[in-house]
Image 1 (cartoon, rainbow, N blue to C red):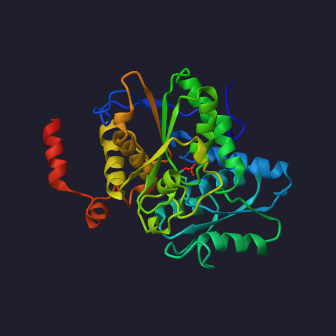
Image 2: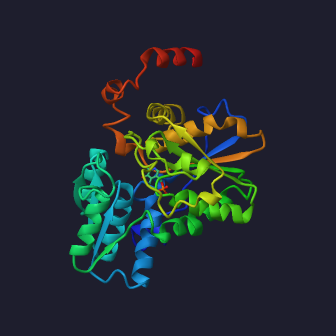
Image 3: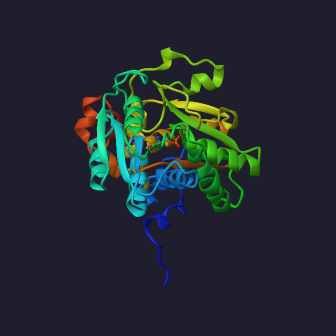
Length: 338
Ligand code: PMP
């Protein structure tokens, strides 16, 4: 018989899929690591398990205790699966920019969800960072995960995601392109890959409204870079300890509109139904095409599932209200393609 002991045993070993149409202007082999195949439908299952196991081993989390996290949804889903299997309570503190689907899903898997305003400074007592911290101080037997600064986050990708990519590409990967939020994915995968072959280039995808690109290029934390944006999961208004800027070769920024439009294209042209940070990542690959040569093997990572964005970029009214649905352009492109 061949079965997993519980749902956590199905995490990882996600497929690597060749992109065929959306990358037609790129002169290299472009492969997508599709993390939707994890049981919580995102890459975050991997680090959720690792962070909990390390907290147990370090005596920070006791049997029957409460896990508290300020999460944009995907980490919450991963933590919810771990909490169910291992018998913990889970409180997720989330900001109001996140999709309703993400909140409903978290509640469906037994998490208590507290929604906080996005439009306040991180150190404001109403921000989700502050509320999560305060709850963890007030709740007995609780453990505050802090995925931004928790080293087990990037370690999960150093131990799992990086080696998977190296094996799946037979060591031929030349570039890794990925959205950056907490920095866990890019830092863990990037460190592992550069240890195998220091020539592999690591590119981060950032958003307009986030500090990463400017900080990487100048070493300056520029508050003028910070303003509200729509793309979920990537970009930050702070510098998480999990971002290892030394292993990142460069960042490219993708607009909210391009992220949304390219997420829809991934579904329509490749049959890959993924979230907005994946649209940003594939648009980033196109923006970087001058960096690739014909023999290169470019891997782009798709963090989560499109099902969490049905009411957002997969909804025409939502797209139109934001000026993202340029019908003339869409029709013209269809004509050219047909
Ligand atoms: N995309 C999505 C949808 C995410 O939830 C996250 C996590 N914030 C990321 C990208 C970025 O991943 P990381 O936190 O590992 O940098």
